[in-house]
Image (cartoon, rainbow, N blue to C red; front, side, top):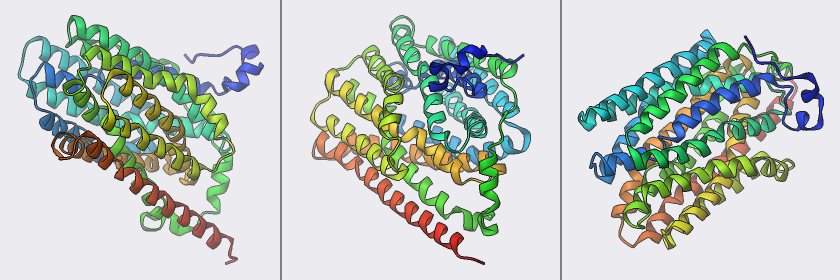
Length: 423
């Protein structure tokens, strides 16, 4: 049974602003919100749990997170292919169900006092489960949106599910003060709710993006081959990969640095991380309006600069206030970049391969997330020269990302010129 929004609410001014006519957006957003609430209780705290409860070193934790993202990177293309072949709903259900069982297992392992290796292995496997659900979510949103509204649709979707990244970290902060391992039980409960919503509230996309299908009819035949297609996809995905090498520090190097060097407590970092979701919810619509008339690639450049500026702050200070300001700047960068990533890929992906294209881009993000924690933990904790040199060195990945964006733009213009030449 599908959830229906009243017609009067849809046709009003607020309804149009929030795209209430797009029922798929809001049903999928609700499911994603419940999942992000659960994940929000894990993501900011997992490194701190392994460090403070299990007694693992920052370098070992960096390797664990790299292995986690590596597992996700390997499975991402397969997840996109499965989604395109068997349907988004089936793929989502399988991934979310697996994630629910794995988080529940982690709670059991921790409650029984079993070796950390059991918890670590289950955590790595959650990345595989999440990889199955990522592409179907964004494929559903892409298919339910017109090409002109895609950036706005992704922005609203991001606001919806980031409400969970306000609630989850705050809940995790309170849970950590009572019984740290209960964050896994909390996560498993909300992933179960997410599964229920997918099973009973989400159907097939109503729209089929006729404009995208029509646009793809003019696409050169060579662009359906992996070798041709995907020079654009390659450059853009490499840009995303380098961004991930910076962004992944939020989950590993930054909390360990703030906890061990800055004296920030575990609950305090949870509150700081909740600001990420708060900035998204409060600022995403404003950011969308500011950047509405700005070129997508120029917007990506500006978002990357926000990323780079954020981590420079850690080089000067690691107090609660400075890390909170860092998180705000980083979140503004995410507000700019995150809705664009999948919108840009969706704009040139063949209709029948949207899930595959998004999963390939996501695999590159995972590759950056594989390298980021390992490189970051070594650079931040071992590189001589102090925090300013360490965090400044990580910004070189932002520069590399912008170089890839320049190459992507050049490839787009080259393809447009070639398509304009009569055959």
